Length: 489
Image 1 (cartoon, rainbow, N blue to C red):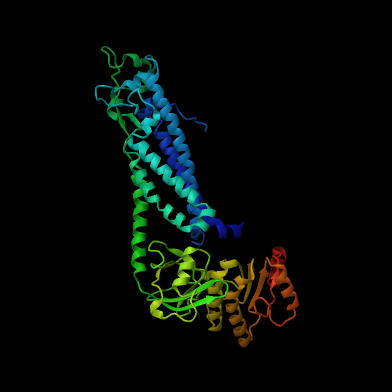
Image 2: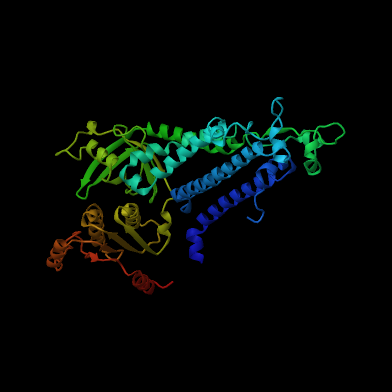
């Protein structure tokens, strides 16, 4: 339980606070609509049933959770208004002796305040939906939301990233529509002045005689609720605008590409420099290449160590943007590309919680899969630099590194780093400092035959390392038990 609290506690706390705020706002406004001001509104519509840091780096997961809640509440909101408009329409069509009909006739012909936004019986809810501010903005923001949600599906996002990227910016239209949605004030209630003269709890039974001589109940006056959505939107939108301005400023800072390395596994390595750039292990940057796209920014984990005189990223060539960047850097051309021909790069960051806490443990266990191994390049290099230079803030005595890959090509670029560390550890007589286990999870029959023939070779036939590649997936129960037995406590 203590480990769970340390790893997940902050994330869970933030989510519960966020949910708590949503529940509070829901209950607060639900109770607000049960006051006398909205007594007659509820007469027409009816009443709802009364019985009815590192962790913060998981911002995309939280973003998706917020999106699901927006979609869920949008569906509830739309269905509720469909019922509302049917009842508003029913109020206009009721017989003359019902309170709903009387309330719906208030304001007809004399330009007085009204309660029922459907002003005549010679119409229908669909017509009202497309001829009112609330209806039109509701349709627009619903369509924008549907397009954003559908284009965010993984199959679209991975295959047609540009479609996802540009469609997702419909959020601007969504929030503009959301702010304007309440301007029409179709949700209406009795004014405070009218409540002083007309107590709905006392006057409701006498609706047939409202305003007549000799009665104590004048005709009630109504007014629409002032729009309040802007209060919730303006703050986040201001912060978003500030973030975009900061990103624009940072993108104008000069970034120099000092080295381009094309690794065999379709992985492009860019080594760069920027004045004043400082990083910690485990962080990432956003990158833009104007010659490829003026608007697209993509996140990449930093693979360099803070001790190095440059910062670097490894980019897997898997989509249109990465392919275009690869070609812009001369990856598709033989020979070297002159420095002045390299594309301009914009860099924003670094971002993310640093992983420096790994240096506070005697024994560290690192587990990566596929291209997700990139953060460990920075960690492994940095901890080795610190260890060699006898940094007193580093307590790490042993690192267990596990890497799982589905294809042999993915090993190639990272194996270079491991080979370098392996050689340096042998020179320093510290071969026990890093214990690495590389697992190949899928292979072809022809590859299996090759592996079998060369299995007895001094170096591994796949990675070229002293440590042989393992096949399949690790038995984690055994791994944890073994490490736990070697390092009690």
